[in-house]
Image (cartoon, rainbow, N blue to C red):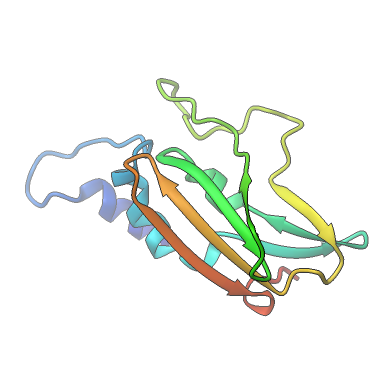
Length: 137
């Protein structure tokens, strides 16, 4: 399904010429992130901790200014994502080896996760997840 979505985004514009996209702007990544909202984050229990993963958002981080999250209705924090490497063949490449795609919390401490994205054009998208919705096996 994601391949079909990406093809549709690339071919958007009807009968006009095929335009290659680098998926580095809000206009290019917003349709993908809107369609994959259920995959923005995930929770995994590992070695006595809850790990809150941002892997999906990292793959589409170009076009985003901020990735913000809050747990259990608390205050908002920013996930510090690796920068977008615009002008390179793979602008969304993961290059920083010691940058983890998750944040660790006490085991079973995550009940509700809210995510607020700020796109590079200033628009925002927000959604919330109950633990059971985003648990990894």
